[in-house]
Length: 17
Image (cartoon, rainbow, N blue to C red; front, side, top):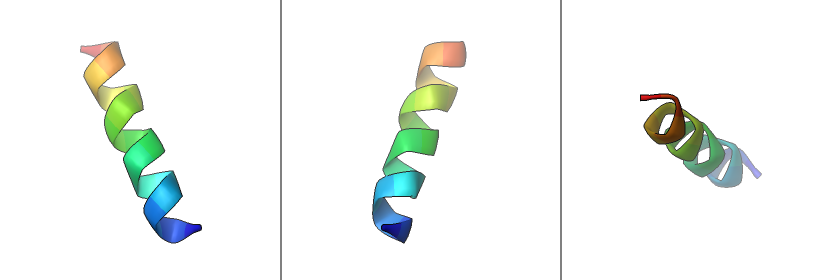
């Protein structure tokens, strides 16, 4: 679950930029 959240965060940051 933690890994999934990390991946989601990475995608979110990538999308934000």
